[in-house]
Length: 129
Image 1: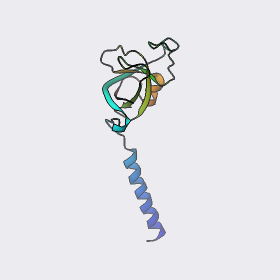
Image 2: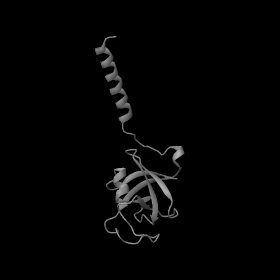
Image 3: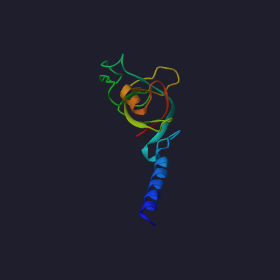
Image 4: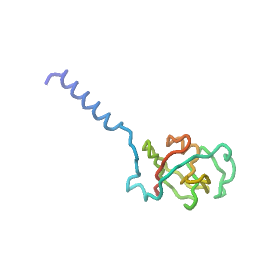
């Protein structure tokens, strides 16, 4: 095979492989090795009006940290949150109580929501680590 055909073949394989790996992942779920799936549902974020105030755990809320509010999980619990639409995930530490909006499963800090690509309400899966 001449050099030109080899180059074209390698480029074709690279493009085919890139398309395979860059395809968006719909309805992503945490892998079994990443913790026990405990909940799925809508997630929202909170921050601007709460930044600097005390959380239910007693620590000062910082909207720039990877933290979240959950109704029942113990403070300090680490949870992997997966955006079901994009497949993006983040690990957050539970340090507050909430959400108080009906039907939501978790309230994320602004930094956590941004890392997941959630700007309002997004559908997520939670896995306890």
